[in-house]
Image (cartoon, one colour):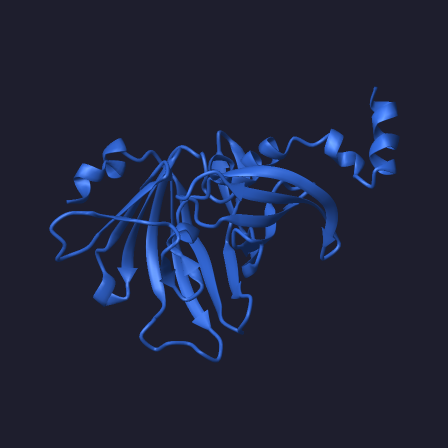
Length: 245
């Protein structure tokens, strides 16, 4: 059957890889290197904005992220004026609390965090939960063969309506992304590096070390640096919305 299917796909102008690759499993594997679906993990993120329109009122940030399965908690460590603010994500719901607030308020992962980064960009990535993937083609990025997926949001709680996502065919890591509007208009793009390593069940596993997000229309960029990645058990109470108060 496969011998008959491959020539047919080629005749239709479709890549033969479509018959061999499961985009859902491909996406699930790539999520692991960005904190999605892993039990018990923490790391720090530092942000830096650049470009001709950098706002001095939008200083660099440092955040502590804790993640476990389908939940993550981000606590702001710097700048000082924002210290103590916390953003909790459980499944597709998010809340914000900070000194002075009487109770947590619901927020959207689409809201801007700093520069070009949305709140959802710094939470644990769980694209396999939030998007329906479609395999488009195979393409090389900097000489590396990649599968190109179109991701369509399955919920308004997803950070973006649509993405084009390049996943390394050999490493199962997301190396490049374009973030698009519902109509398909390109809003931002991102590139990823994986210089960190974590030990998952005795196996050294790559973990994201840098994400550079670029605006589609200007020279504005936000660089997120990931460090101090630690695998550890995190109490379920850390992800209880009731404990944000």
